[in-house]
Each structure stands twice: as structure tokens, then as C-alpha cells.
Image (cartoon, rainbow, N blue to C red; front, side, top):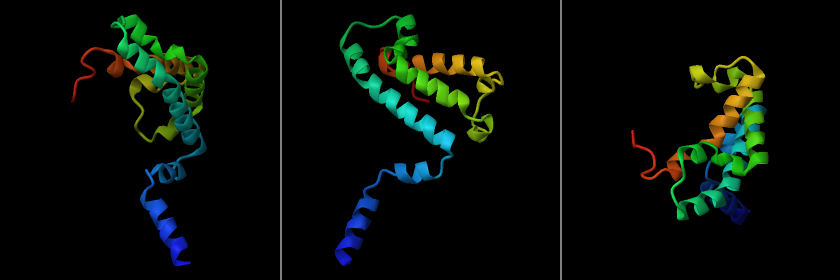
Length: 127
């Protein structure tokens, strides 16, 4: 019995906190979180390859996320379907888009271009 508790304690102590974070999320938040993780995992090899190649143009960077079109669409859909109230005051004015199709287009564009820090020479400025 002691060994079982020790193992449970060890596993819990080594947790990255994701399980606890997911437990506090609504279904729509968990869905979008998982979609973002899947999208980022799909993009990882594309980013690594792009970093070894010549510098990309601004347009290429803005559209880079389209290298994983299925995952990009899943992220955009899951984010657009979330009730605006689920953002708990963290939503900016440019994301407060009542029309679903406009919100969907916003998230497609936003996530497609979300790798500028990784892909631009010098990365992003530290604030």
C-alpha cells in the first residue's frame, strides 16, 4: 500500500500541470486547447525545416500555418465556436466578432500567421 501511494505521489509530483489545467476548462476550452496542441505538433517539422532554409517573405510567414490545413481549420473552428463569454475578459476588441463566419476567418488568418517569432530573423522583441 505504501508503495502504491509513493508511486501515485511521484507521478503527481512529476505532472506538468496539464491535467489540472484541463480539469478547470469548459468543454469548448478543452476542445480548442487540444486543437491548438495538435496544430503546433503538426507545424513543428515545418518550422524546423524553414529555419534551416532561406529567410521567408512576410507573406510566406503570414500564411505559414497553411502547411497544416486540416489542423488549421480545426483550430479556427474550435476557437470560433467558443462562446465569447468563455474568454473571461481576455478577449481583445478585434476578436469580439459577433458574426461566426467573420470570427472563423479571423482565427484562420491569426493562427496561419502565428509563427512569426519563430520564423523572422531576430525573433520577437522581448517586452
